[in-house]
Structures are given as structure tokens and as C-alpha cells.
Image (cartoon, rainbow, N blue to C red; front, side, top):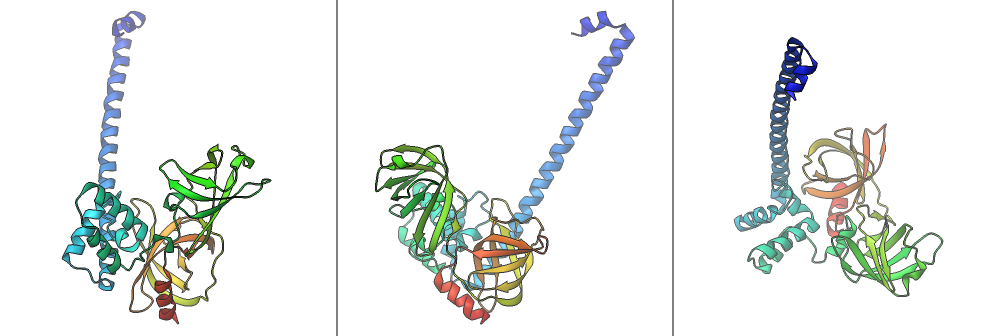
Length: 321
């Protein structure tokens, strides 16, 4: 290639072009190296911030829990199955996260189920996960009755028979041929936490077997109403996603069903799930919720609690009464 270039251009001009290419390549290599160093430094900084904020919540929760050294070691082993093991506090506050990590721990190590059940009880989780609002269709359990509705078609009743990685399988009471495969459907279901709905698409239909694509957006269909009380409490807000750090903010009103909080980063949006840590009285609460609306040009977020059992809700209501 260089010989051909020398034939086309005079020798001096050719060497100028070659010098330019070499210098450009060196500058590009240096720029990529600098970018790599900056990104590596930023990643390390974010990991340190994540670890620091997670540790802050972890020790924020400890006074409310009667855990011994064996419990802490077990939580650390379970945290190895989280996307970010530093966020071990998530195991202590979310029964679904606890159960997922526990199942993976049982599958890979020899651990006594009784030990896990004991820890589950100390963390205050109910025996039945159905007491909580599912975060996605992957959290549905077998035998839950459902109603599948498609616009312009008769509603189809059925029950969940399995939940896989790719889809939810529903056994319908009648032939599912009335449902079109090319249209969206809305699924309704109920457990002891309330009545919920999500929209999804159809993967396939085989007589009375309906396969639905997973949905990450489950919403409460009927909401309970609770009186709100004006407060001014410090609160930690963490977007419910891997790698997000907790942010300090202020809570302005609180009820058994939700709260209004100053948007700590100004970037939290409607439908985003967040974890809240706060103490309206002596007891400290750590609650999962969903942002249902914003106000004051996005400066205030209004959150509906999702993973709060009735006992904890009653204690919270008494704390603000």
C-alpha cells in the first residue's frame, strides 16, 4: 500500500501523509487510553459510593432486627447472588429478593432450610409471598386465578400453571381460540395484597394453553385509601435497579399507603420503583414503592407503597397518629 502511495504522490508528499497517519493513530491510542483510565476511575468511585450507601442502610436497619453473627454470615452468603453483593441490605427488606437468593443458595450449597426459615422470620417476612405485590409477571405463583381481557373479545378465565424465563403459561377454562395472537391483552389477578393488572402480548396459543410474554409493569387496580399526615422526615431513596445508590431526601407527607418525597436527584420519573428508608417514630421502616405521579415541575414525587404487609402498615399508621 505504501509503495503504491509513493508511485501516486511525490516522495515528500507521501511521507507527509504517512507522518499524519502515524501521528493521528498515536493520538487516537492516547485518547482511548485516557478514556479507559477515566472510565475505570469512575467505575471504582461508583462502586465505593454504592458500597458506602448500602452499608449506611444496612446499619440503619440493624437496631430493628435481632440478628446474631450466624445470621450476618448467612446474609453475606446470600448476597453473593445479587447483581451487586454490596447491596446485602436488599435481602433484609424485600421478601422476594430474599427468596430468590435463598433458592440459589440451596441449589449451590448445603444449607439447612430451617436456618433460612429462622432468618426469614427474624426479618419479619410473612410465611406466604402472596402477601406482597409482585414486581413483575415473573413473581406470579402457580394456581393464581387470572382474567385475560382483549379489546373486542370475550374475557377468558384461567389460572397460572407455570412461570418460566421466557413466558407465563396459563391454563384457560375454555378454549382460548377467542383471543387473537396479534393483539395486546390485559391480565387481572388477585392475592391477599390486593387486585393487580398488567398489559402484555401473546407468545402462543394451543387450545386451552395460553403463553404470555413477561411484563415488568404490574399495577394495583384497586387502591386502598389512607389518610395522609404532614411530616418532615429524613428519608433515604434508592431507585430499585442494579447499581443505584441511596440518596438523602425529605418526606413531606406519609400514610399507610404511600408518601410524598422531594425528588432527590430531579431525575426520578413516574412508574419508577424506589426503596424508601425512614423512621416516623422509634421504629425504622424500609419500604418498596412505585412513583405514581410528580408535582411542582417534577420536584416532588408521590409514591405508592407496594411491599408492605398489613402488620407493618398498622405500626406505621400508629407511629404517625
